[in-house]
Image 1 (cartoon, helix red, strand yellow):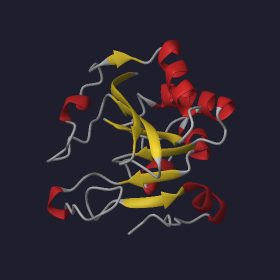
Image 2: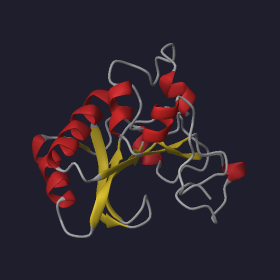
Image 3: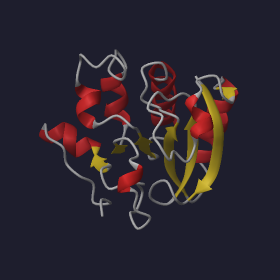
Image 4: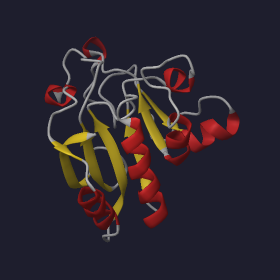
Length: 176
């Protein structure tokens, strides 16, 4: 898996200051995407052990609340093995860090075992480690700059632990 950028102390993509990893590779190609260069799975640099250690080090710094993955598409089936390994290591070494994931797939897509674009052997384990999932493709005709933590009104901010516990989608308290 490649990434296009890592941002440290980012206040825009989740609660508090966060380390943000822009994953490369996306098949959605949303009209009006703010990051179209990340559509290419080969864009940027490969995730290495050094990259992971840098991310983990950043999450241990005072004032950093957690890790946010966006892209590109972190939940594309091609990216999931490395996303799983990264999140597993983060949860093991910095368990207090919250995990936010932005995806163009919907919750329903992700849990559908027949959706081979985004559901595979790592999907359920990844979702178990995620605190907040912002789901749904960006839709330019539903773009709203007043929304917090999302670009278009069709996107949902999902409380993943509560959703898994209740067996139905539970929207996050951060949903506008």
